[in-house]
Amino acid sequence: MVESQVLYLGRWVSREHFRAFVYKNDEQKLAKSYDEFSQLISSGLWSAERMDALIDKPIVAAKAEEKEESNIVEIEPKKRGRPCQNQLKV
Image (cartoon, rainbow, N blue to C red; front, top):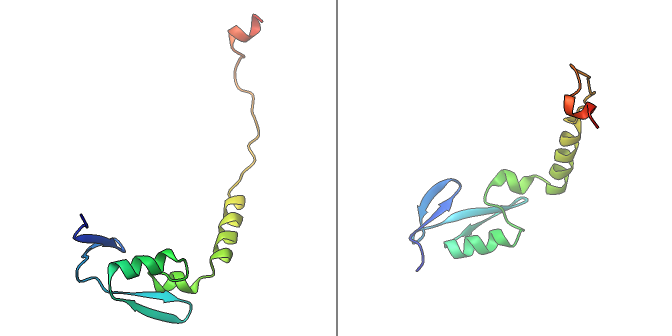
């Protein structure tokens, strides 16, 4: 059985009356049904939001990797207290 509502951009929308624009670079297209919308989005060429279509995805991925590397911090081990007694009886 097909569900009567679908989740679109964080909102529940009626599948029967579903209409939405999809975006690709400088183009936009009206998807006249949820099935057409999901087919366009799953192709990878179209996006549900305009900002996603304008961003070059490989550049975003590269920036994310740079950001992750900049968050790495060297930790220097510090000796604290006495060694465990069990380790002394080796």
